[in-house]
Image (cartoon, rainbow over all chains, first blue to last red):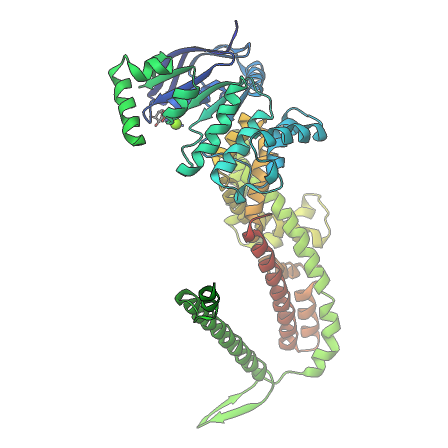
Length: 253
Length: 282
Ligand SMILES: Nc1ncnc2c1ncn2[C@@H]1O[C@H](COP(=O)(O)OP(=O)(O)O)[C@@H](O)[C@H]1O
Ligand SMILES: [Mg+2]
């Protein structure tokens, strides 16, 4: 079966800093992958290379059959990147809702402007997804008046309304007050169980344990471990993984 | 239950008392400022009333102004009000367009565009406004560009203010966080769509209060256009009748009152807009 995301020999430099080192990774359809690792290990950069918020220095990215080869240039490359972005949805740590638009306007912006979807049809789809994250009742509110958890749920609905093939989450609950983490995690679980392919950078070990099919550990720009959650938590292979898990456990108590 | 209802009549809480004391202090301050304004205004009027008074050995003589002249020429000078507003409005619109283009030019990675933007701002900010007004008035016809003198004034004012206001739009653009751009790009928006739909609306909103300030300043700088002698706005009219009838002082006082009144009204509206923006929901 064709993987939804296929990363081949990816390298990323920021100036002289070698942030991603020859990374290859395949994520099949319907799989939920959690990406964990210490701060600065390159998790965000890897995620952002998938939808080209960061330009890879070397290597190719393929999403849902659309391959952006390393040597694609100019207009052809821009077209391919655009196609990749249409197939990926991203959720940011800081939500990044558009503050000058209401909740509903935030959610229909992508379909209407990017896909040229009929406004009425877009509203229908948006309302369905807002209902799904339990935010339909706030559709006319402006983001400023929402709690962090509510903002993040709207951000998830905004990404879903583009009907992506894979959802990328970059620490979606790290900017939230602890009591608001649960509502966002529950929405993410719901989407996962419905079969969405997901790559999630997170510190929430509970989510990794309960929802993920695979947990990948990053360190120093490489993938040092890639296992089923139960294996990873019960007998980590790499000492760095063990140290990481012990730290998370200590934090949770 | 009884205890609760009693608590309602109980003396006010500490916080309430502090709040009330503060509110009282603020009201008193504002009342005193109002009174002082009134006194200052009175002194100003007195100065031009022709009255004099003596304290000890010093005599203060007021300036005697000719009220008949004022009454006779009020309508003529007031007739310049519309022209002043017209010049200011046209100039501020031109200035906003130029300022936005210059600010966007500063973000360009295409050297000629970046250069054009910085060249324009540097040249205009490096020379006096009054010189620019003369220059456009004199130079444009020699280039074969025949604008009405009014438009050459508007062009000079617009170009001048545009250069200064580019800074406002630059600040507006950089006030929009990079997360906004990333969210738009992640949705698949092109750079143009991102700018038009996401960045600009937020940047322009940020720029509204300072642009209001510039407009108020513009209404007064529009007086400089009178030097060309062809825009019959407030300043030109007051100088004209003042000179003709040897009552320049009276004429200038009248113009000053019009400018001041205009500024007060515009400042009021600007406050209203600013307060509404500060509230946040559009
Ligand atoms: N835009 C950038 N410019 C320069 N260095 C960066 C940039 N983004 C990230 N880095 C560096 O790359 C490394 C990996 O960062 P990141 O992918 O954000 O790690 P993580 O998400 O795992 O915390 C860090 O050392 C970080 O300082
Ligand atoms: Mg990160």
